[in-house]
Structures are given as structure tokens and as C-alpha cells.
Amino acid sequence: MTDLRITGLTVSYDPQRPVIDGLDLTVPAGCLAAVLGPSGCGKTTMLRVVAGFLRPDSGTVDIRSRTMTGPGHHVPPEKRRVGIVPQEGALFPHLSVARNIAFGLPRGASAARRSRVGELLELVGLSGYGDRMPHELSGGQQQRIALARALAPSPAIVLLDEPFNALDSALRAGIRDDVRAALAAAGATGVLVTHDQEEALSSADLVAVMRDGRVVQCGTPQEVYRRPADLWTASFVGDAVRMPGTARGVTAATALGDIPLHTPVSGGAGVAVLRPEQLTLTPGADDPGGITATVRSVAFHGHHSMVSVSVPGIEGAVTARVLGPATAAPGESVTVTVSGGAMWQPQPQPQPRPQEHEH
Image (cartoon, rainbow, N blue to C red; front, side, top):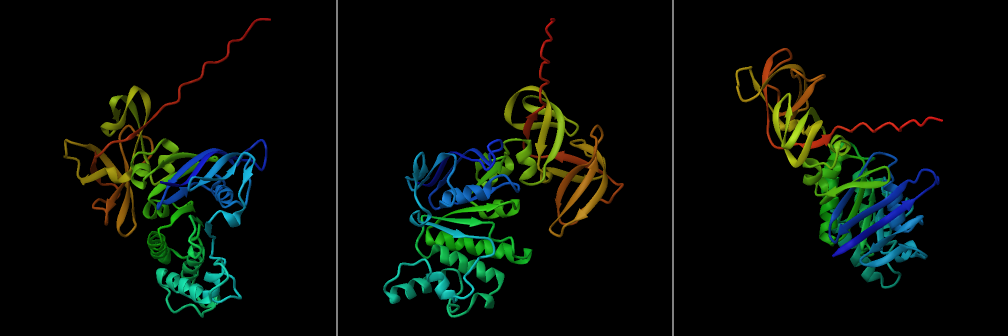
């Protein structure tokens, strides 16, 4: 079952430059989808349309097979069953935690409201915090309460608009895991907007990459990372190693040897795109199965190192990711071997010049 389907969505603040330009996106029920893209690509505008805060120029938005936005049709936000977790929580400062969570619940039996609030506090790991005020909570705790408030009325979809931006890096991973677990426990479908590639890849079931108001690729985190749709996506979602070469069929001839391609191509010049961890570095230059290179620099990141090497026939550095500290120092020789396949980006063909006509 599909919980969210967006078709042909277009939004323009400036008629000459649409913010969203024919966007399509489908999110299955119970899925946490991350919408990933650079600033200004239209991510938050898309959320505002889904929530009902903004009417698009064209296109449709269906939530659980019910049309919320379409030609001549617009369901107001309060009738869409959409929960929202904004940046920095945005809790009501004058209300207790319990009253913040209960804000969107129907007025009526106080016992039922208290029971629901208790369930949600337990769900987000903050049982016993109901009487506290928002200023008494840490940033991570405020985000959990914001999620509980969004989940309180049992929405069809929860929209999360870069909710972890205000948290320091030490907290972000833990809070992301907590939010994902709470959404799964509640059986809710989530749409997370972010520009953080690590956040999207590590927390989502589905990643939709946006550029210039459109979804350019949508798939599992593994699919998007291992088989990017194009060179831009490969460079945006993680680190990319670009190897110029000539392709034919399922192989590309490069300075690092023949590299298998994910998809057969007709042939010609272009770029094979690898991930840095696909390059293995062996100290010394005696391995006949690889290409000899010289280490230029080493950057140690704790659990891994980024090693830049000079490869004969390649301008600039080629970067490999190795686990732990590097075993070779700048100036030393290493043998580079490649594992796995590559995405192929053909070289753009020159466009024929228009013929000049005599007058």
C-alpha cells in the first residue's frame, strides 16, 4: 500500500524559475523516506505542499489513496492527518511536556488523553517527563517530544523538516535511531527532509535525491549509493572517484585497468565512477595484479583514512578509503587494485553548429 503519492508537482514563486518542476515521488506505507538534496532544491517547499500549507501551480498529492491536492481541489491542513516535526522542535514554551503532546488530541475524556500522552512518552523514551517545561529539556529531548506531539493524533504521515540540525554531532546519530524506532513502533510513515547524506543513508528505508525541483533518483540507500543515476548524484551522495576512460560493452579501459560496468554501454569516451572504498592499496610496487601509484597525502579520520595517490596517466589525485590508519606514508609506492563495478558517464557529444545561410 502507498501512503504518499506525488505526481507532476510544480510550484513557482517566480514564473521564470519554478522551485518544483514536475516532481514525482511515491512513499510506501510504513516506510521512512529521506528526501535528500542541496539547499534551494525545493525540499521544504514540497513538504509545505504535502502538509497543505501551500497550493501548487499543478500536480496532485494523494495520501492513502485520497486526493489532498489536485486540479480545483485542496484539503485544508487540519483535515489531512499529517503530523509535522519542524526544525528545533518548536514546542509551546508556556505548556508542559504533557500539554504539548496533548495539544492536537480531541478535547474530551481527560483519562483517555492522559493515557495517550503516557503511551507516547514511553514510546519516545521519556516516561515521567510530563510535568516538565520545554526549557528544562535538552535539545534531543525536545525533538523527541516534538515527535510525540506529531504522533499523538495517529497521523497517516509524519513530515520531518531537518529536525536534527540544531543538535551537535554526538547526539544526532542516537536521536535519529530513537526517532526511527518510534516511527516504526507507531506504524507511521515518515518523510524526512535533509541535506545530510550520512543522515539519509543511515536512517531511511528509501532515499529520494532532489535536484532543481525534481527527484533525479529514488531507491534504497544501497541502490542510490552503489548505483547512482548520474555523475552529479554520485558526487552528491558520498565521495566519488572519477576515472576517465573508454568503454565498450560491460568494461571500461582506464588508467587503473579494465573496470567492469554496472550497465552495458555502446562505447566511447567517458568517466567510470567508483567509491573510494573500492580501491585497495597494497604497500610496495610488486603486485602484478594492480597499478603502481605514489602516496601524496593521508588524512586520518579515526575509523578510516583517506589516502590520495598519484596514478600515472591521471591528472590530479585519486583517493582511496582504507580502514583504520594507512599503512603507507606520503612519498611511498603502493599498488592500487579495484573491486566491484562502476557507473559509466559518457562524455557529452559536441552539438553540430547551425549551418550559416548566404543572403
